[in-house]
Image (cartoon, rainbow, N blue to C red; front, side, top):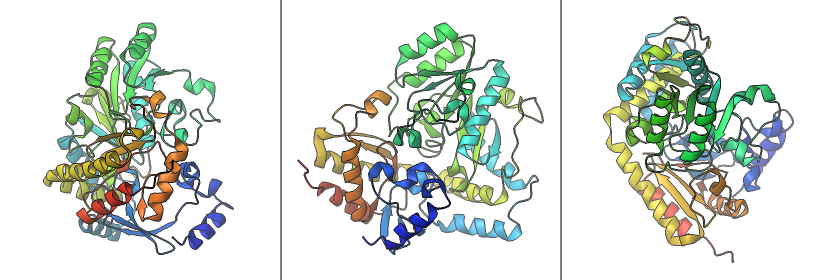
Length: 425
């Protein structure tokens, strides 16, 4: 495919933007290619500046569950724009969106809107510490919770892709209260609670890890976390920035039947626009200013454009619950194509409309097994699909997303391309 304009734009961007991109994974370094610059999108397709069309399985890293430029969402945004872009003052839309979230995720009795997933997690951690009067946070290797200093330790997502699980520029004092356990390993959690139990404010987890590739929780693992946090009077935080409204209208907590104390959500609640949220039990959330003494603020929090898009998006999901079954069936078709082509050469993990193909013969259940993947093989696989008009996440350690805009033709073409992947041996 022609990429002259993308290469030109990338070279220009590198003169004034670090690495030429505004988020590291976009640089395509992990797949040894030059990034494609996107000009527009519609439905299941994206189009780059060179005029190439791709079937999109990144979906803006998850929130585009309805596909791109959904008419109802776009019209809601246009109407909101005509009234003003931002006010820095309360609006009715803020209440409507938060009320809708609490109806769909009942554990979020009270919710505060913010402007990103990183901000949501950072604020939830602060609230947990303020509520419990404890400092330590327990997280899991390979789980990514945004780039706030205290959580950028053994992180997944872009940090894992770039082989920088611990970022420079983060003082040791910022991470000394961050405890690291192994995902799906109950003993590693128990050992930390035995030693630090009276100091742990909260356990934070991606209920389905999606930033070291998709890694599912073992049966009973989330329930174990619920029980041990109750035992030690710590809070349980579900980071549902990826899984929220992806696995169903009630997120992973409804899917697995485990209720956390606090939940964080990301861009899907704004139809893909910059927004996030954190919420939970009323008595916990009332520690947040101006009711309580845990300070958190944001000039653009709950801005009228993002809330309008979010209301439109969540109403569609709420009123069309069969969306989830349809996209799960479409996902399974691609999973089956991968298994038919590669067999035991790879590990495929999937749940709902999330999936990952790991180029390892090991069963991927945690961080240590995820990094056994052959990233060179993945890079070749990515390049092959890209040249065939299939746009996948440009990292072995990111999730692939399917939307309700993906048609049977899209899925069939993708499956055929995968089945015809050349034998490199």
